[in-house]
Image (tube, rainbow, N blue to C red):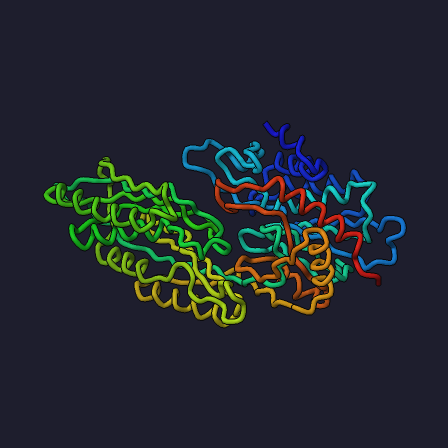
Length: 486
């Protein structure tokens, strides 16, 4: 299956990507890919370091005639988001990604592709392995756990790197040069609740929300996509308000940095409301589908009878939960006043679990303004504390402040214009890049981010453009030859 990927051009890039994608590398479980990259560096005879948190650094001397150029750091993250379609049988802990070519796109069979940030990793590997690519001295930095906390970047100590310029290869539009990004914080709300016996003359239903696009909770947050947790809560709220619906369990969403695509709930109502409930809930479903007909044409909401559960939520807690989830902000909170079209602050209600007397709600709040990030996080905390939840903030990381006077930015702009006869889009993004964190220990390093076009990151619709990879590879090679003198 992956042989057709190896036949693509540029061969050096796609072959390394295929090698990498044969190695399981979900976030928080990077042991196999760390060993893979360490072995890769050792086999090349290059100085290879694994730091105390698991980041891998491989150092390669400059090619002949390039010794007088500044040392560069080429950086990408090893981990990938592990998302799959509900009907896909796949184990991210043991299996390599199954890829195929679809026109101009490389895709995966029912799972995330791992082009985010695997194409960046593969680029660096190809340069390290090359014998005919001119380049200055390189420090290749492969970080871990970017997708679920950026703990690799946070754990990288000062003094390990000597490079003066950092090339981050984690931007996902090939006409963009990124000079800034948002910071983020995880907001988690938990509480216990009392379970009650199921009343007599009750009937039970499974409610399923599925078929949503999902996507990156930073880059895609402004696209008006559906959030499965918010849609599910809307159904539960209506059922409770009109028919006394009671919740037995909810399982919605998955990773904090992925817009929730699916949610599942098990509920009960009194059998006297069966006909009225089905008529009413269908009207609500029709309304929701009508609202999302453009952005979510594949949305499915299924109501099916099922066996009665053993227990249900206490009604008082349930009422508070559904009202809190209704009130909690999801999506864009504020657009930037300084950069047109840039989302400044947002929130993703990523995970809702209700089961066995415990509630767990997980959000990822992002902002390019630190005070605004805290403001929205406190707004969410207030909503959830009002219903008795214990709320914690964790995994906070800073944004990356744009430097419009960056010397390496001017180099990239000139090369891009020469190669494409057009100006690049110099942007800041709402995703979380590691540059801001790395800059805390390396404040004098000149940083830039760019990459090939990748669509649908963090979802099973993730795909990488073949023609864009060719354009990007040419860009990378020219950049390496034009790094400024020391």
